[in-house]
Image: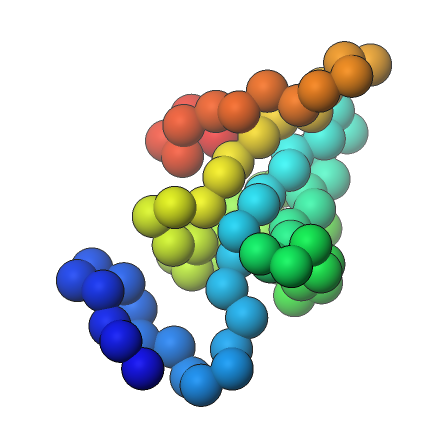
Length: 80
């Protein structure tokens, strides 16, 4: 497996976080690159944010989807 500098070494076949969505009620949904949910990272924001920030690769997409917007708002990792 090719290791990119700064990326944690991952087991062969381990799924990586790609998209993280924080909803208005502070629930968090997490998906891999194929659009599959990653339930181990999902739940209330305060309960899952540390693990997500630790494990999400640098190219992960963080978004807030508050209210009734048709599209979520992409935010920086630090501001998520």
